[in-house]
Length: 166
Image 1 (tube, one colour):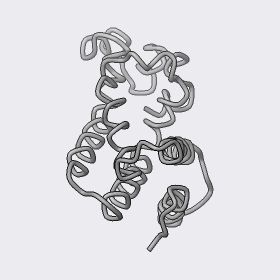
Image 2 (cartoon, one colour):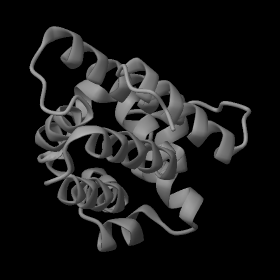
Image 3 (cartoon, one colour):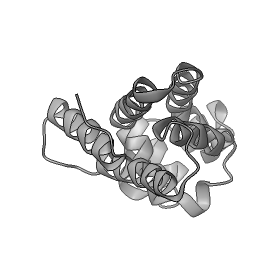
Image 4 (cartoon, one colour):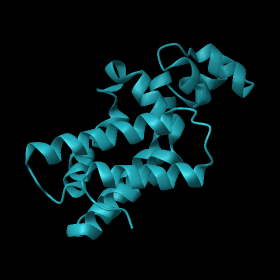
């Protein structure tokens, strides 16, 4: 994941991966049929985390639902910073990747939870802003302690959504 995060998916070869993990390219291909298979394996925990957040948000509404959506997404983006960086670096190449199949629908439900189901322009735009800003911030090397970053991301996201942070 470090290679993909620093060089991008497209800029990382199987040879590069084999060198970093200390094996031959043939040995690597014995365990993984392709670079796509390696990326799928690496993205699986992030996908599982997103699915768990989606399940957690299936019922909450109102202020609690908005705060749970924001906090859950911030925590997820911070936990999987490298994965988010890979996705943002290589969005055109990765949008059709099999490991990302359910992501657009889950993100749509997450954004709906962030605006308590509103379909008004303001809510939709601010939800997109929160998803994008949190993702980009977590994918960047911001020189701030994690606990401060988490608190500021949640507070800023809630303010962006027109909610007062607790």
